[in-house]
Length: 319
Image (cartoon, rainbow, N blue to C red; front, side, top):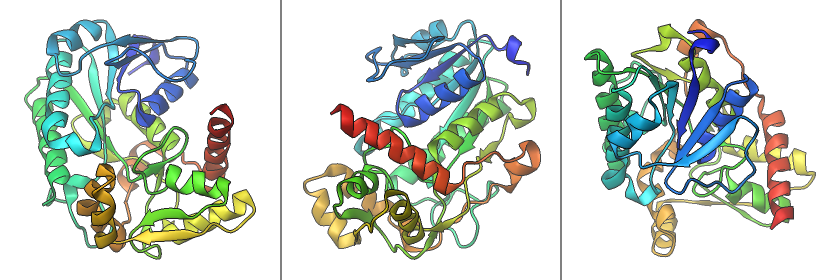
């Protein structure tokens, strides 16, 4: 698919992934329209980017917004505690709306649908999730791929592990809980066994991977694990942060019972409990399928951490 044939790219969702996709599209010289409910974001948008309000659950609105688009990126999601009720209608609305256009649909997903895995996590693994959020992910992935197989819409899916980087806040294990604490000299509250290997994906690499998938016909009808930097343990990740800030970072790891208690006051932390298995055993993502088809362009963790810290410093200075 040639860039000149794509028209304007539409990005549903203005969280960290949607904005990372925006950054990559802008870097490739593409015009972009961002869609969220409010029609606003908390940062100055680059030239060539516009934002308009829209309801992703309404296929009529989606179809109108995407009428002239070549690529549509689904990076929208509801609050973490509302996935079972609110996520499927968002995905269905975008799917139904895009099906009325000539655009191809690129969807950003995580890895919850696989459930606990022994060994490297590959795209050909069955959906074995038993958690609420894992089942929702599996249901939506099936719906998307079945729509492609039925000729309803051209779909490709990019999946990535727990991500970090600019704009990544909230419940991320290596989000503000780590980076704010590291900059402030405070204790970082993390989860799980810090000495288990765990693949972490830099958010800019995730955005780049989704745009790459959108540009290739051979990506259609399949799910792909976008490339991540070398898998290391969470403790090793913290050590890289320590090297970047130039001082030790104290960490406190929460297990299931602690998350249950914290969840009484912080709902997102309580929701993390059912996904804690990802941090209690090795969680290693295999991206060799993507690498074989499209090559690998990933940011090494030390560089990504420096870029992330720079964003957090800028955020703190503007507060």
